[in-house]
Amino acid sequence: MIEQIENQQFLEFLRDKNRIHFNAIEGRNGYHIFKIPYDNDCVFLHVIRTYITDHDPIGKLRLGDKSELGCIYVPSIDTILNGEYPLKDFICKGNFSDAYRITSTDVKEYYRNLCRDINAEVVRHIEDGKFDRKKAAKLVEVDDREIKYYKEHKEYGYVERAFLEGETWDKPKIIIEYTSREHEIDSVLEYLRTPVEAIVTRVEQYMIAEQVKIYKAIVCAEVRFETMKAIMNDKTNPLHFQREIRRIVKDADVKTVNITFERNGTVVTAKTEAPKLGSWHYVSDYDIINGDRAEFKKIFNYNTGGDAKMHEILSITHGKKELYNKTEFEKTLV
Image 1 (cartoon, rainbow, N blue to C red):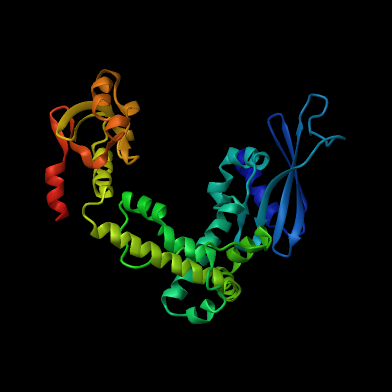
Image 2: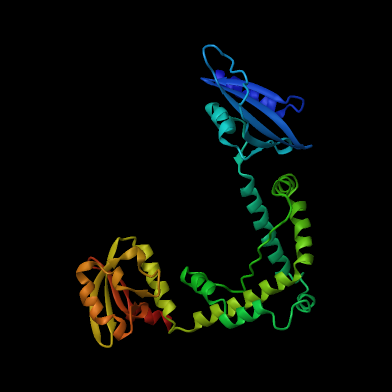
């Protein structure tokens, strides 16, 4: 009951604009909490903890005591940001946060949310035709190195990872990475108080200031999209086998599997750790359980073309259960 009273008193202090200091005692700890105004609707709470002794039952401040950031408090939305340990050590004793619905979240998390929402809104504007692509193209050099690199390398690494993770795209996936030179706390405070206005303002500014960056993002997205379509349409691409093997191993959720490989008419069966299977384009002898390694290396070594590839896997079994059959899977690719 005492804890609930102290939490209620702390809440009253937190919401009282005229009070700047709060004292509390919990066991052998004395808490001195001070408000430091940041703007008209934001204060930093600093906490000084002192140790209670028999000679000092109220925990007076001493020379050398140092303050630590307790939290950032925004009265208008009754929210605590960056709730740090010295304050948590006090308020958690009576479940203060749960009782009064005052959250304790890192400013960086809200900032990431702000950036995420801005990125999504910029993409929406582009897809709705609100970006002048022709105007932006005139600002880009004819032989721009970034665009040239996109087109030469097809952004293959990114697309490959996306394909193997099971992604499918029905349109170019535009990636916008908004960053701001503004003070992070200022951006977060505006986002928390007026989220719509904060996003709209920044989107408008970004669309004007970063025309070249946006244009390149669109070109890159189109290149990636064409690369993805090429992989999807090429049923002989080994990535199809790798993706299917990754999927079945993940679904099976087993520690080891037996794999039957074939190269140049020679077949070998070996045991390997299942979680690793499909992570790379190949299966190395290092991945094979010791007892089967020597036989595996006879077929898959430097002289015969190197490690076993995903499309050289004929079947995968666990116990008596067949998890993968190459012949059956190839029928689905037609």
